[in-house]
Length: 278
Image (cartoon, rainbow, N blue to C red; front, top):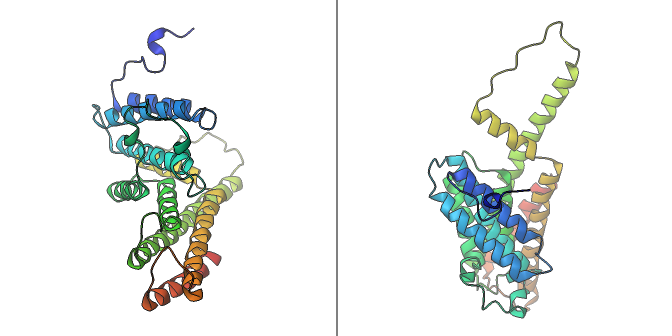
């Protein structure tokens, strides 16, 4: 049996890895109750967030360790938003839950605009260690924000800026993932072609930490991850088309567009759709 001091919440946390591991386990506990007990999930998530914050100030911090914590924090904010604050894009499930006895709840219930800002900040601050899934989370922020244009009173100018960010990030992400997947496939083919056992075993090549991280990222990229980005891309196209159709038909719209903005978005949507189809 586990000793009491080894139980979740009672371990001695010293370095950044300790705090990271402890916080992820609190998250996992929260996910077990995500549909059956909202309050229990939120309490676990709040504990995870508190430990993540302590991990950012822990001794022996590393660039990769700090990125991992910030990535998990922003992912947690986004998950709470999409699961509870705006389920199915617009339903606030927390209005049906008495949360008065959950202190500090506001620290995890951030508006989508703030979540997107934080994800962007992590993306910009950690270019050498960021991973494809951070990009995917940022794309989800952008598409969900466009879907909630009325809630956040987005102007035509803001929609254009959002669309520029989304399309550029999508194209860069797809280009990178396809390239990495091609290199990975080429390596597999080369390995298959040299499967005959050599007369003497060759020494294992030395691999530095940067190479290891590149290999780990390559292992994460699959046809499914590319499909995730494409799916988010086509969703964004659909949302833009809905705005444009509303404008052309004269129906009330959540976003006020002028003629020039409409023409710009039409051209952007057409070009982006062509890129996705490739």
